[in-house]
Each structure stands twice: as structure tokens, then as C-alpha cells.
Length: 329
Image 1: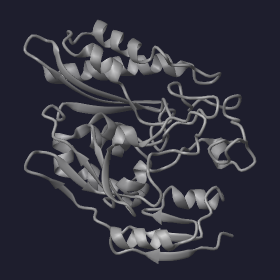
Image 2 (image 1 turned 180 degrees about the vertical axis):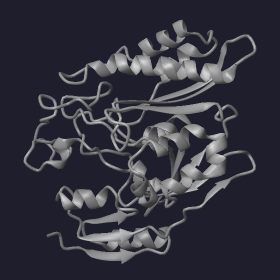
Image 3 (image 1 turned 120 degrees about the vertical axis):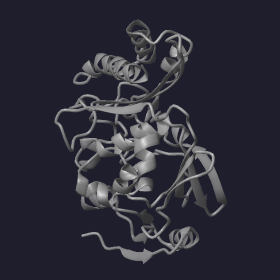
């Protein structure tokens, strides 16, 4: 049994003070990931600092950008009329994740900071460098159907499980942080780290820092966006491959601008910058869509059970861009 104390914070400042003063403390939002990890004794905090009472408002500002309180529930964000109409990839990505019951409890901040669902990470009898530095990685030679094909290392091949984060990375979301040293911001695409030789260090968060809000800049063509998730079963399953995309095509049929991110492929939500660069200024056709997908997956490396994901990712990118091309017509 895990014995822990519980503290409830009224705002960000009190949460930080409580965490700094707590021994082996953790912030608690919806608890949909942390409680699971505590049950499996992967996480054993001595103090939980409840931050569920922090701001969960969703507000569109005059410039068209969106400010989302970190305590906003996933269901509320997905159902927000501005999100549904102007940022549909975000709404669809949230609805593709977990079950309705979990989405009703899970928070935006917690979703961003959730840890991998790799079975070896959850199994205390397995070797896992993320759980215990230097222990080894059983996934490399084990069951690795759901694991990384991009950005992995010999130390870790786990993937980030969030659907929402894939859309947020495509939308250039900015994470607002507050900690003992004050407030700062960081692009979501830079928040999560690739494993390298320190997979136990998962983000660029400083000690005791707290996510207070997520900002989505205005994007004129974000309304022409979507999210597609390919998985083993129709619901409540993690992505084999997912694609968040927005596409802007000019009158001549050329790609004026594009946003593209992948899920289920790496230790972090993967912004497809190579594909985006290749597509801009070129014709919006299947040949160029395929060339962009090939460029993005050129460095992909498959394992025994997941090499199929490389071709699956390419085909999914092409299919999603082709769908958006039809919606631009």
C-alpha cells in the first residue's frame, strides 16, 4: 500500500509552495495517469498536491488565438464551439483518445504530461531505462508493435501516448509554465524530449514547474484541418499511427501552407517539418503528398513487430492530405 498525504491548492502559487515543501511530491490533476502509475508502484509520491481547482477556462481572444486553462477537462475542450469550428483537428484528436468517462475527468495539463503506456514501463519485473536508469530496455527485443519508428535510441523505444498533443504540436501550441523561478513559456513541440541516453528525463520542465495554460495562436486555415487515428480496434486503443493536418491550397492548386504532425511514432508528438517544407509551393496532388511522406519517414527504423508502421504512416499522411484537398475544393 502507498501511504501519502494530500494537499489541495487554490491557485498556481499555492500549488508550487505546497509542492516545494512536500517530500517526493506530485501534482494531481484528473489523476487518470498518475493514479494508474501509483497502483502499479511505478510512481510512489509521499505527497499529492491537488491542482484540479486551477483555471479551466477556454477563451478566444481578439486576435483569434485560444487560451486554455490547464485544468480544462478534455471533454469540455473537445465540445467547445470555437474548438469544433475553428480548430477541428484538436476536437477530433481529443475524441479519439481514451473513453468518454476518462475524458470527462482528464485535464489538458495532465494529458500533456502523461507518461508512456509501454507495457515494460508498467511492469516492475521488466527492464526499463525510463523507470530505472541503466536497467536496460526489454521492449527492443520484446513485444514492440506500438513502439517508436522515429527518434528512438538504444536506451528507449517507447512512444508518447497522447492524441491531443499531436494536434497541439501541429497548431504550434505554446505551453505556459509557472514555477519557483517565475513564469515562462515554451513551444509544446519543444517540451517533450527524445530519449537519447536519458529516457527517464521526459520533458524540459524545471523542478516543481506547473503547466498553467496552453495557448493556440490564430491560424487562418486551421478550420480546414482533421485528425486521423489508425489503431487495432475502434475505440479505447492507443495509436499505431495518427496524423494531425491542416492544409491551405491557393487558386492555382498549389500548397500555400500546411501543418502536419504524427502520433504513435516517437517518444514525443512528432512535427513533420520535412514534409511541410517539401509541400509548400508545390501542387496539392498525390505524387507530392507521397514524396512529402517519404521525406519525413526517410530516417524511420522499424523493430521486429512494428516495421509495418513506416509504410502505414506514409499511406495515412497521403490519405489525410488527400481528404483535406477535397475539403479545400
